[in-house]
Length: 252
Ligand SMILES: Nc1nc2c(c(=O)[nH]1)N[C@H]1C(S)=C(S)[C@@H](COP(=O)(O)O)O[C@H]1N2
Ligand SMILES: [Mo]
Image (tube, rainbow, N blue to C red; front, side, top):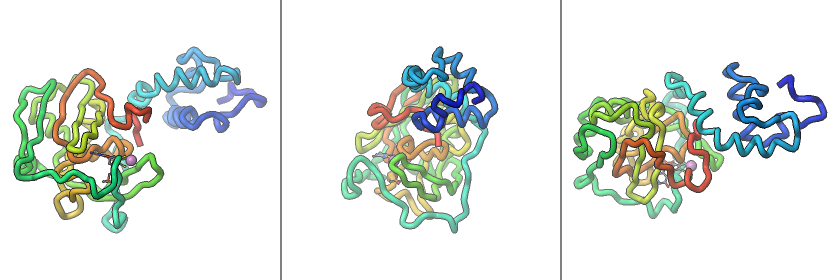
């Protein structure tokens, strides 16, 4: 930061995404703003090139975030006393329109770069080892809430289906038309789970029955509910909000 001259805008004057990424780089102690300037090819000291740098940055952002993402760093966990009640509902439609998935006929479809493409019933998912987490869900719309989710560790599931761990992405398709995707490092993160329960009960309809992806290292919109199909791929599948300009990586 010493490269910024007093008369030039400080990071606080810049758009939040640049400030945020610089903060992460700075906290990691891994890259200085000067090095960042070299990498983006934009001299951030020149006020008029800030926009250019920001454009380069936003294209580059996902790569940098993926690089900063520490696959072993755990999201904060909470106690039952911290759980938010009532837990907020959110979707691109009102709660009354949440899909009513029939658990009896439900099958989770699996495709892409996997050895075993058999589909899964809820009972089969429940027969896999289950674990619980009490973590904070953070929505870009400006709220966060602590909840308890239980289900199958996603890396365990990926092993069971013989997923190619060298593939880049896992994509998800939901019963309400929503879709999203995550990078393989996030998919293999120990706190990424296929959640079947919320608190002591099966996931209620509004929170994603019969199964949602719980990813505490990602913002809320990268936690798809009502998942009907997932696939392993090297082509970025994007997502409902991601394709409308929300940052794809969106770590929390
Ligand atoms: N299928 C589906 N999943 C979704 C959404 C959606 O509209 N449909 N909205 C996302 C957003 S923006 C948020 S904040 C969370 C809300 O989850 P909740 O209703 O359990 O709080 O779900 C995410 N997953
Ligand atoms: Mo959200």
